[in-house]
Length: 136
Image (tube, rainbow, N blue to C red; front, side, top):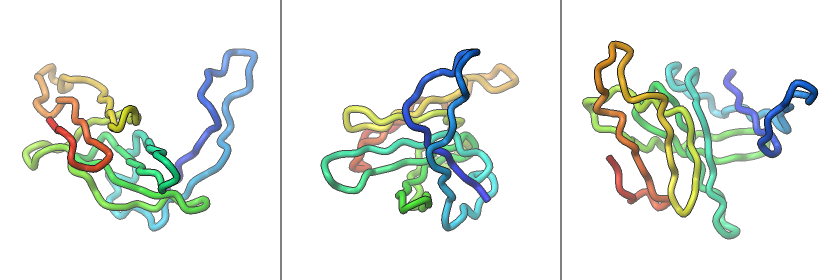
């Protein structure tokens, strides 16, 4: 079973502080059927605009797509895939995601392969909330 946790506010736990405790454990329902995606979730972000339901994206470092999702109670409900890279690339290597000023921003881990060669797929993908923003 894959689960994601949500914490209340970000702060670092110093040596004298207690570690952050999750406020709620979210279970992914229905489960992701691709093991590579389910076992490599790197981040999630939601855009809360007006009173409408939030737009949320889930990212992982081993896939070439992000995935929309919704929150229902203690369930994270996976939605449609949003492809970030063309067919010739294997993965985004996305390690973090944030939402600001109407756009999602993905952060990658590095620009070089472990061999030291440059990775063409490491351009900074951007996606407007509407789904029609500029890409790589």
